[in-house]
Image (cartoon, rainbow, N blue to C red):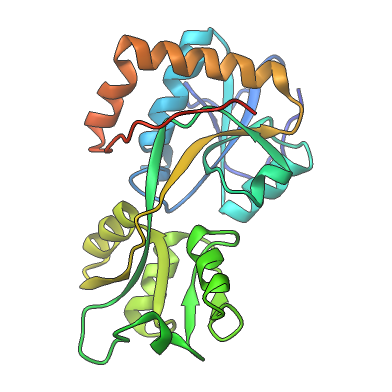
Length: 251
């Protein structure tokens, strides 16, 4: 199995820096609490606990690497990673990756500062700057409303950076999952309000490079076992993650 450049932060599930040649290489984001973040220099979050449970069940080793999210996506696409944890399964991404069955859903949200001068509608963001992910569901909806080219969407290296940009006035709004936004606003000490939240529950899965059917099959088998045994629900409860039951059709 490949080894990623040593200047990137890397940790196995036992959080050692020794790479096993039989281990799978996985990527995760930083600054995306409570799903994926760094705590005392180590990977932490709901997605980390889930991937630990999956690979414990499979009896396989895993090297878990933390990057900004764009690097995770690029490294997976070009084969330097075997999987990415906690990736939203969107139509645009399905052109490049295959996705496991979803193990939770996120509620996409557009936040602004909770103050009188903040925009009162999405259309008031025309000519303004907002921070958001590429290929996010809300970006797709802005396109459908004909506002995508009228609102300047920029990307931050992490959701924490994006929330900080909102707090100091560098952007007028931020796109992120509801739980992430509320967590970070509380951590930074800024008051925010929800400007827009279409009731779209975005499925979140493990992503593998297209046609890596063997690894995908192992992950799905483990996820189904964790669901059936109740272990996945225990992890959700530990992180206060709500679970919406939906049907799943394998890729």
